[in-house]
Image (tube, rainbow, N blue to C red; front, side, top):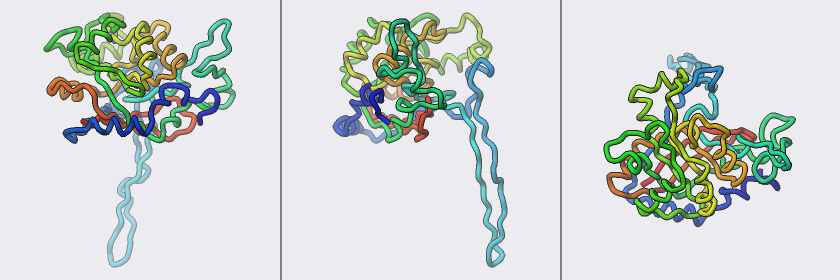
Length: 302
């Protein structure tokens, strides 16, 4: 699971027992906040441009089985087919590589195309590296309130998040990043969809963008040794993505995991109410060897 190109050389190396204990000490009220969108939510972009939506079918539907004394068992069983990155999810380190002139490595740790070829799936950088579960400190960076002001619901078109914005957010809310943190960027993307832009986004309207983290923020994440960058938008970085520089910098260069399309509205409300922007983050990705992503199955504990 963690060969010479394995994920333990990246941000995951900071997910220690000590980090887990420190994260659990952040739980004060016992409140549990789910951070997941419904798995059956309509896809943001219809196939063939996007990932297909979930298929949920019955294997058994009220199957009646007679048993003793005139009784009957009634059995239900179902089957799900889903895109691992269509709803709230993690990107595995093997999700994104870059072929660059003069370098042999394509994926994190210098892993080449043999990491994902010729057999389908990742050999060392799949999502199963996280299948043991994640318990760490989560930090919410409320860029909506910082950049748009009180009362705003989401970041406006083109209001992307650069290094100066991150530094201002940390200073404004008194947050100090620590090794192994999962940094959650709040952009209000779901509010934007609910405000009337959902169908236009699905249709690919050219004037609809999704603000996100710019690649010039990578040095601060590297210096802090964070474990993951998470956002409520589709790609953590801005969409349209351009060349995917933040993906390449985080996943390939630094071994920092990316989480996308997380449901952060309720968490943002709670953080604003009491001024506490750190919490225990718990997530259990699928134990699916070689997979390139997984539903997040994530909770914030406060």
